[in-house]
Image (cartoon, rainbow, N blue to C red; front, side, top):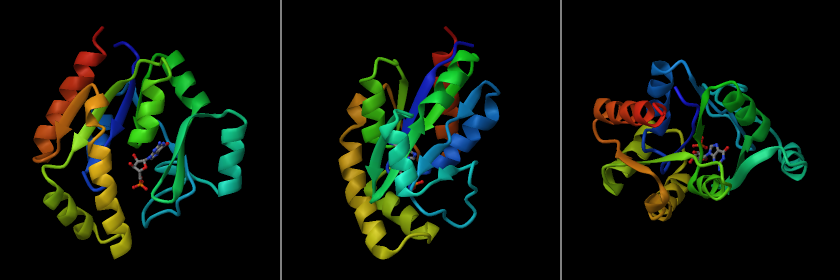
Length: 186
Ligand code: 5GP
């Protein structure tokens, strides 16, 4: 299995976290890149598993000292990928999955790292709105901003190698498994 760098991007509420978990459970040689973020943890999120939760000063120190492979501000918070983690995993022959936004995705595509990029789409904006409201974790103004951002993000899907629509979960998982198998087979 060839070690590859996978970028997964999607508007928030598309079900990407669930899809990524399913996928990671299927491939021993695929590891998740735990991002750093200045966002506060949501209920159930664990430091060092879902994210490394950091304050803004610590985050900007990492940026300034060149420790981030990419970083971006998303919905008022900063998110970034640790360079050393990704380099070590690839060197050890593991593929690495980055769950990052379109700004970060574009930075990696432009970096010469030759990532395999996957954009996950909701079946429609209406379904996305239902899902965002259904999860009940975000305030109304946050939901509205996420919906606005979703349209801007979806306009970037043309830059991605693969586009997968998450309508029926099992179908989307099967499609993603096929992509990882195909991309790591050479
Ligand atoms: P959430 O706050 O819902 O966990 O994530 C919000 C957005 O930030 C998602 O689109 C997610 O993919 C993105 N994100 C998470 N980690 C990173 C990262 O390290 N870099 C970038 N550029 N985006 C990230």
